[in-house]
Length: 338
Image 1 (tube, rainbow, N blue to C red):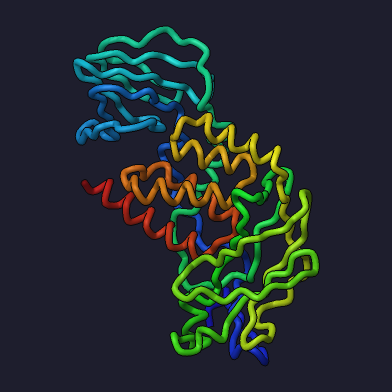
Image 2: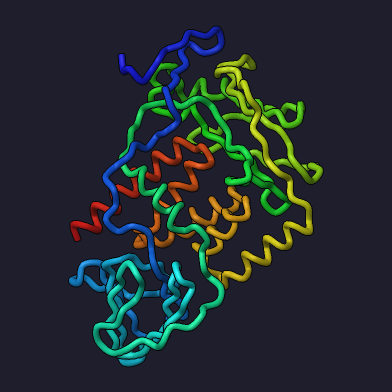
């Protein structure tokens, strides 16, 4: 038997698999790129980038840039570099080639403007969060974690509001090992459900077949902190380990929500920046939705995907983390071989 897995007999579920630890993605090789050091914005005209000096691709939108990248402009190309470390901006003009180093953007052909203090679109602590996300680059499939839920803390706030009212948690019975060991099929799937208890008020949520994440909209909350816990049931009986300590979330009042919406709007429609902004404000589920939408429609943004992986890990969505980790590895390999 795998040393990571213990099989526990229960009356409600024939077997329950428990992993020692809570990581679905194992640590991989340390990234050579490090964190993005600058962002190109206000993109206009012909602007291209390359990672290896061979294959050039068009820059279509605001884009984070890593050490080793190069940027070049055509006769009508222009944009702005915003250094994420210093907060200084430099203007990019036509017929210029720029190399991205650990310190920022340096022109090798043509010239950049003198640095001036930039405004907006700086992402606080981006480097730290990005480095954490890069640790989880090798998928370790087939291990079920304990049923857990994200919880509010000062360092990692977890907030809900009328605009983003959903709690999310892992649909653990979608784990391949659990499915096989417990003989879960389409015919008996409806036997499983989740009991979410908020401030001693319990609600039964059916297990969504084929979905990696369970979503439950909360309503009628007073602003402030609320305790909650999530448990797996089979035919109404507890089928997961008893939750020893409840998680918490903060319900945000209308005034705070408006301030969060204003900060999101200040990102100018850039979905990646909006996701980071919402995450910084504790709106983790809202941020997850924006991340998912952005990366689903921008498959070429491979190097920024660890930012989303770290966000998913913080929400304790192990099955989604495994799925997105596999996709990240696939896209990364294809990009390196192209």
